[in-house]
Picture 1 (tube, rainbow, N blue to C red):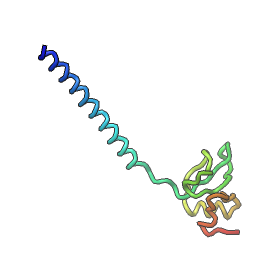
Picture 2 (tube, helix red, strand yellow):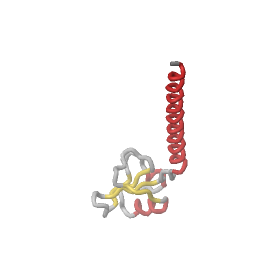
Picture 3 (cartoon, rainbow, N blue to C red):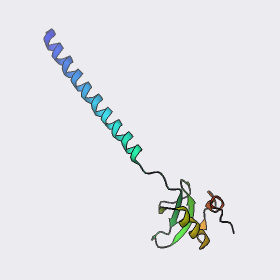
Picture 4 (cartoon, helix red, strand yellow):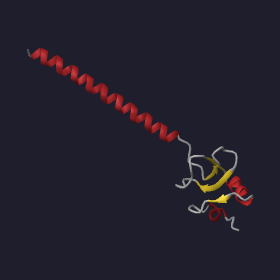
Length: 101
């Protein structure tokens, strides 16, 4: 009877070790994904629903930027603002870029 109990406990221990190994692998993959993620863009260009026209320029990470945005560089952000694209009234990219009317 004790040998039976021993086999059951060894099987449970093996399952536990496999579970731990899987969880450690998932955590390592998650960390690698975070490390490889590209940095957030410094500037965002919000586009119209069809994606044809620029609507607003945002500072990267602005909570008011909609889903239809793409990352742009500083020069592109300055150019968009000087060409009449609106600056977000919450994050004020025009102030940060020094492009004031």
